[in-house]
Amino acid sequence: MWIVNMLAADIDRLFRHDIFYEDKDASQALRFQRVACFCYYRGIHAGSSWSEIGH
Image 1 (tube, rainbow, N blue to C red):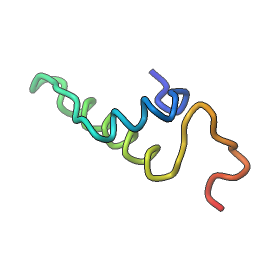
Image 2 (cartoon, one colour):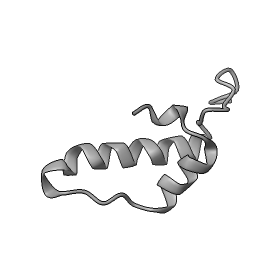
Image 3 (cartoon, one colour):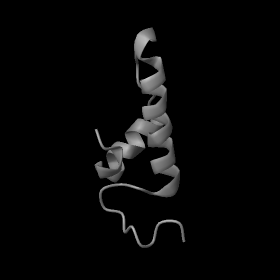
Image 4 (cartoon, rainbow, N blue to C red):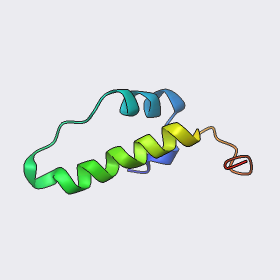
């Protein structure tokens, strides 16, 4: 799943609510959650203007 293609509201939900996962999936789930946090703090989502990100 490409997190950066999610709507801003979806990124907000992922940031505010941790995902549940089984122990065997911990590594991948935590990476997914980190990317969601990164997208939230940087304002990256489906409607983002890529030329304005990072300025």
